[in-house]
Length: 296
Image (cartoon, rainbow, N blue to C red):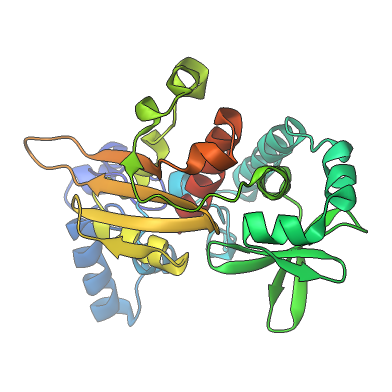
């Protein structure tokens, strides 16, 4: 494809049509690799945009990178500051719109404060803390701070406040609803759950965004999954068990596309997930984890 990682379509550029300049291609393309090698030979370094996309295994910055527009685009090339400011403004508006659509009921914090802390720790496999509960989420330790009614990410003796409402909602629901039962090690799909009908229509588990990002980039998927503490599985072309919550494993399976088959993603569960989370909570958890996985 003649669209560069930066987003410029070389098919409609006279320099490319006349043979004066070749396309950069995407950040994971053969064309991009060859173009970067030429740039290094001529200029001593590749284009910073192309080089960054290649390093992070990103196809197209505007579509695939959450950091767009970054400083690499703020050097007057290839887009105007007005265009970049518009992109930044509208992306922020969309994020705000999405965040505002999820509200954490204050009663959840009230109930958490009133419940038996020892039972919560035993059922959810959480740790007691003077301010609330510590829970493992993927590769992070989170503190559910009852007094301040917020989540903190704990790292190296410091804490970082988590402002994403969906994260707070998922953690609170799990702490309040986790049961004594453990993982039963029976892998099932959404259609095998007792509330399978919920996962249809607007609540269908979305994998299209993951396919766009990793459908032809199994190496990028492996890197992203392992950065989240994923455990490699001998399934599909690339498969990982992710542990977003102590009793809730999720299984992400990728089949890469080729000339004959289109790429495919599947999200599977341990049968025991129904003991701990309702269907809408499962749906929210998958959306949360998939979104984090997309960021790589």
